[in-house]
Image 1: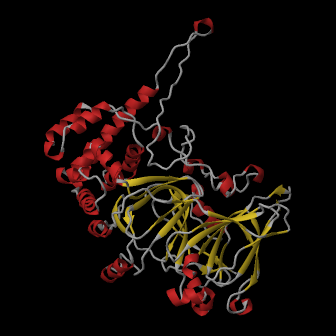
Image 2: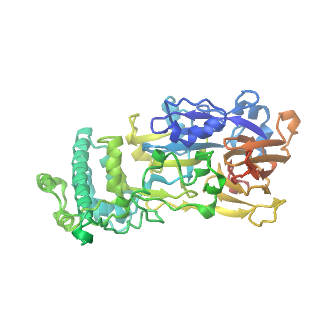
Image 3: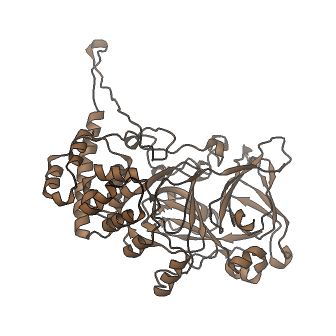
Length: 558
């Protein structure tokens, strides 16, 4: 085993250090933390933009692999050469990332050749995101029916598309990639002046509707009390969220407070507050994963009320952009509660005022993941992470094609031309559970592993949990691993090495591990973990040992 020290990225969308899991894990990994900067990503791997280094020598992990290529295993070397095929990350997302996609291999090679400064490598970048707190993202094109409903209920979206594209989409009875491509490209290529006008109108309308809905909810009733006293009673009107929105548990307004403001996450409560008593901490355990939290406004999403006179006048003045007056009639029949997408519009406009990406959100799935749930994205799929803490694994690449919600260069034509235009709700991975062999424990639940296996050769993610005082052995993996300890402490032992001895490679056969430990493990190493049973002088019961592991996809070796 080879302890490594990893690098961080201080992108603008990251969280302040005190609220960022990236910053806390990085500090535990031995990095100095600048509290004045946002912390967005922790990179674990060999990509030249953020290379990991061997802790004992300071040399890069990539140079070590080049010296000992047998550490990758024969099959990996044959297919991918002398480099790790995956890049492992942790992300702390405070505000939206760009509306983006990642190129396939052929497009990546062309982009890198033509513009190497913007596209620094020639690799594709399929990826998977595993939530470790409540996590929110825009992911892939929404089903046709949902997009059509957005067109009927959002006049500003119709105006952005224009009459021709709107009518073409509304006339469909089944998905059409060509029609969707024309409509999405028409929206994304709108002039900045037009987008600014449409977004301003949309936001003003939604703000009025939200205020009206809040006023309706504050209906009061009088009840007589002692001495003729009366009390005001708050009544909340609720309606189920749309079925396409992934959710499993209703919440209150208090529940919906942002996790970054509280400095905690439901998945990571053990290690966001190391001083907390383990008996009260929530562990990385499938059995205690909390369902996704939604704000009360989002949960109460319902039909809308009539349009204001201002919007009706704009529709009348823009008759060429409004295919049918039935839209206005429908909207006037609806109540004023905002949908989750409309609430997102207000939030995105605070982060990126008058950006075309705000309107594009109506084309995409809004996905909310609970801790322990994951989504994967193939190349050429539109997406944008919105908020939350997660671990992410991908093919080793940093190629990003952007088109909205960013101050960076927007390569809109390339993005619109290259997207797959597949429609439908994303597949949510919940992990395949496997009981691990254990030692010195009478408990049958001493240790288990959840495996998240996307349809990509380069990577999968395994999450191992070991109860305090228990030991567990992992299956021997024919490829290399990177291990990240999320919580707990204990020891790791390598009972066998790879193709060369541990002494010649400077590897450790046994390591004490704790939160923030990050370790490269050569192929064919037989690993076992032992979790600590007590912590500190007060003999407090230790938290479970929780380890996230990136590995080459098992299907690659079949």
